[in-house]
Length: 332
Length: 278
Image (cartoon, rainbow over all chains, first blue to last red; front, side):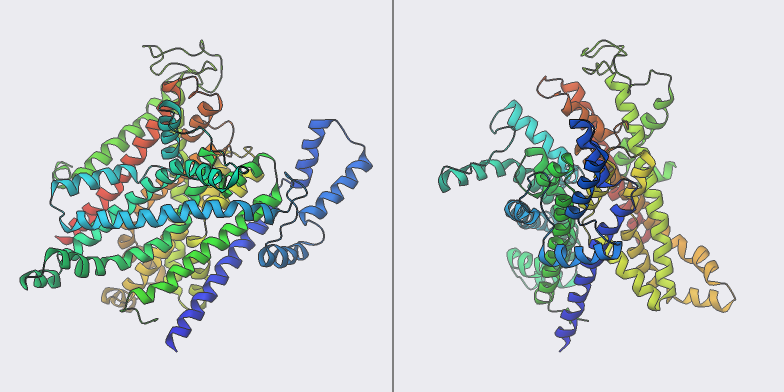
């Protein structure tokens, strides 16, 4: 019964977060003085000369309809909620007309999920193992050096690490191509090979940054836990260091790390966008960049709506799993 | 001061020195008379490092060293503006929610929680792409500040909730102090040391966000910031032309600035908890 209340509350919060988020991204652009339709028309004019006024009006009406800018603000909002949010239908993409935004995102999203989920989980596991070792024996020289390295890597922005790796490994050492290319035709083997080759540098750069934080936080958690009375007692009882490390220190400090994982997902997604763009990895990030360059507003709105839904959902999942990991939580 | 230096930990000291060096570059060296580094063709193109041009010149004939000084100044300014707005607004909302309680608290917290969870970068991308590089420094700072207030307001609220129930607050209330007075004289001091650390954190993340947007070409086009400097060097193929001073100096400066600030933050937090422990 209690779990049910917790569950419902959490679901409600999830729905509210998404609703507030998408409402925000719907209304804010409409408060800007710049009108995407007028922008596009003036862009077309600079590209291909002036248009006749009636021609312009027809184009304006056409574009307004495509953008979903017809009708009152409230009607537009309703249309966006019912089509965009509920059916992921954001109309046609303007940069690769007439394909729909939804299907293009559907093609790119798996690449982003693959990259960010794998590197996040790997970073979480590796970082926590190293952090645990470092915190458990925090006075060893090696622990201090490890922490020092982590502290020097963690605060650097994602795109900078990506940029430095690209310069070193793709430009100077020439181990990887400068921009990723995915072999679409040539069979599954060629495709997989090109995906792996395209993913290595982005994954490494995200892994480096992610691991840094988990090492720092786990080291401090494990360091505090190791000084607890029950750990000292376990040691007096003659338990092996391994047992103390895993079932006493690890079990008590890992819980905080699960919550922290949920909190970090938004940042990881932002980092993944930047990393993808630097390496030209074919995910949502690169798609957003292309959409910005070509003023494809439908595409930008689509990508951002989907990323808000995706991150909120991932956070919800981690939050719902949490009570099962921590027996002390009683869904209060 | 001497005593502080004796008890301060290694990280705090290193972080403080590094940050101070950047502050001196950004706010003292910046005011030394020099040609506007943004204007191209002030000097011959692609000069190497020399006594006159410490870091050489760009392929547009700009002095890299002065460009870097200006970039550090502007990036620090953006960070400071955003952190100030974020911290002040965050502390006020957090105190308000914590003390008002009831429906107001619940509404404020739903909004705050949304802003904590929501991915900020995509929304920043959306807003700045609508302005397409035509925004100004102030607009940029305001946009970044929209995501800087939520975390402090949440933390300050929970701080306010725990402090509210302590005895000395009741004493103050019974002796006739108004809520506002209590907040300012009794609670704010508690929140201040946390806010300082949060302020530095917000500075760091604002500089990071601005440079991320710059790499996407979304920062104001005439703003000499660390991110824009990296982006311009990339646009003019500094890597392919192997102009390492041009592309390398903003990268290295950014990395050192971030590590310095981060050391300052963690060192300061450790220092505070050590002081409390005694």
